[in-house]
Amino acid sequence: MAENDKKVILFLGLPGAGKTTQAVRLADAFDFLHLTTSRIIRDKFKTTPRGADARIDEERKRYDAGKIVDPELVAPWVVETVRRMYSVTNGIILDGSPRSLEEAERLMPTLLGLYGEQNIKALHLEVTSRTAFERSSLRLICVACEKSYSQELDIENQRCEDESCEGILTRKSLDKPEIFDERVRLFDETTKKAIDYFKSKDLLSEINGEEDPVSVFRNTVVLLD
Image (cartoon, rainbow, N blue to C red; front, side):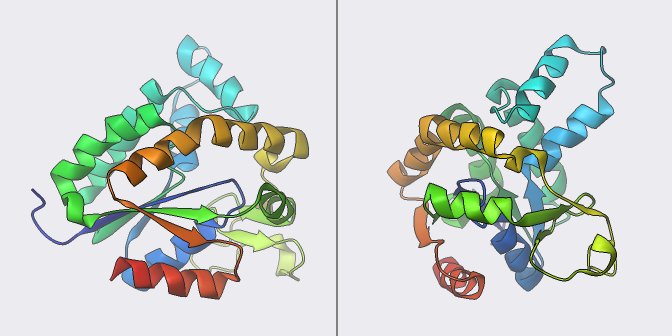
């Protein structure tokens, strides 16, 4: 049973669906901690020197190719982070996690123990693969805070506009067309099973991600009341 009313929110959807955009907005509005699964994975890769762990070296190659990192590795990393940050946050937003049924099943006991079923919210941002690709092909990502920007914006010096960050903006390698197609295939094959898992437990809400970001955010907030 959860000790209080802290919430954990899980944003699920295709790459480019708007998960990070909405997670950042929600984190700012409610003072929640925004955690991206990709950031957790990359941090593990950065802190493990190449050659030090053959399994992580292999998963690093898979990640760079747009494939899903082995849930046996990722799930404990996410669980560890959630447990560590629980006591020092008002709530947590998981951006892009879980990515598979196995990861969802491994993560759920921790979420239930910390937050209680009533405070777990899984949100699926529904967009077409065409919309997802168009958005992904036009976005830039801050290498420091991972805030997304449109390439169509006139951003001074191509740096993050957040005064506390000002990291360099770049295009995600995972947004390259050939890698993006593989990520969509894996979403259909693997991540949809995680979405169905939360739906079977009546913890999932579907959100029309095709609308403009402000409308999507407004609809998201309503679901959290």
